Image 1 (cartoon, one colour):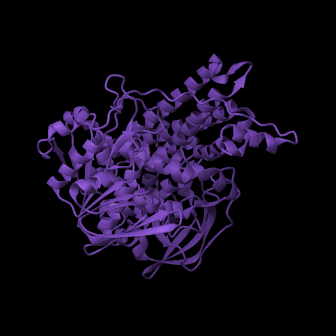
Image 2: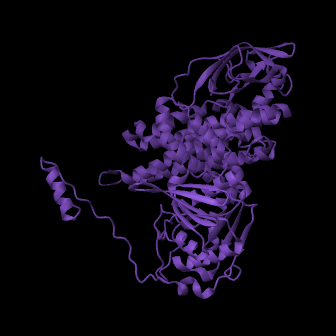
Image 3: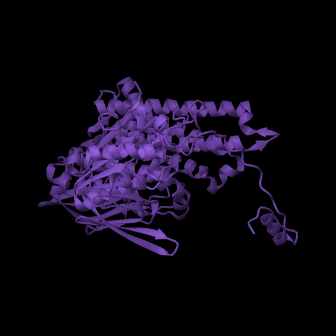
Length: 259
Length: 379
């Protein structure tokens, strides 16, 4: 089975994240780049599927050249090879144009199943899985906390407020996963040493069959018009209980229109 | 000279992430309840920590001793006691990897690398510590077997381990009459003393190993008769580096906590971190640790390269790093004031754990003996 796992490099959530003042895109130099947390779950699920069904796990990353650190992490966990879509023309792509670029690349490299995290910690649109599936013309099985594959049949379980949904389709398909699905493995020391010997294919937009006019800032369908830093957190309201604490708390909640 | 490669950084990072997630949150509880977390050790082995510098054909990670030093320092930021036990386990496995024959390697090492079987190193006796060559445990040949009798003292992992490397006398008095045997847990005649009540290192058991007419096949002899003392000493060179690295990690944890604490704590109208006296103290602490780390890395590279002065460098690194580590941790406790004395802050535990590093794997006085012998040429 040809399993492709999409992995994204994001700014470390433990550090201050910024947008650039010039083109209002993410300032990638302001914070360390790390693997998006949900992508680790996607890699783990891809490795589990390979262990159960055989085949090969390919990491697909779209990002600047420094995203190789993130690719190496996924390879150290046990993925077999990687494709790095890297091109200055991609800078500033929004979700829609990213899905176009990724879909074109997936058509180029081929797949039976595409796995990705259900959202990234930077843009947090949570749209990519659905967009990819539409562009590729294959079923989408999103927000999975369990994946089963039997031959060409694929089924996932999606947790809901009332229990869970079971979604069935046939391969090829796109699956997005949530953090309840598994516990990502640590890269072993052997895995780390082996990672740098694994093939990483670098593709520019021309090689991936991507039309330059549909990607990048100019090709984006959405535009960041303005942004502002989050206001510093204000001091909270303390209700001192002098026998009327319940009333005080209720009045506060009412003033904020919670009750 | 000391720039890490991408792989080395990634290896240290993986060990640190493991320590942050699986050791640090539980370290104080394990210390208080004297819990030996065997399940966590097996998880560590999934990363390759059961056989860090053991050859790959038996499941080891086949890394260098320098890389091992990075790993032990990272692990010890989470819990020096667990990091140190993993060091002892690796030292035991290494002795089989290097001095065992193929049958011995393939028999014991695969399960040691996964830490399904844990290892213990049995040299010290109740009346033979620093003067280890005076050990009295006997191994008498009996047909195809040896019969072992004696008591081993301060044995880390005893009772929980499956593989015991026991140094016992097969010949003349002194170092040349000693041989090394692999004794498996559960062998008839082997028993254990009570878990010792200790100042620190509470997350790993320390017991006597008592051998009463323990019958061991001759196939369990490591190397030849009379090789035991040399094997035991060779193991300790690397063991000393590992313990030094464990001191660095524990002390680094205490120092990092101190910087955070001084930045939060106010007294006399300002953050403590604004006090130049305390800034200077922190500067001295980090300088001592960096000097220790530099010497330790140098000794590790000498061991990897098989340099002629390896033994002396390992002794210097062990002496310096374990002294510096204890002093820094103790200063960190002082800088935390009364809170440093509370278990909850995790500092006093590190001080107690690091104290024993100045004593074991050869006391720091024995390290000075080794260093001065190298200097003066005395035997």
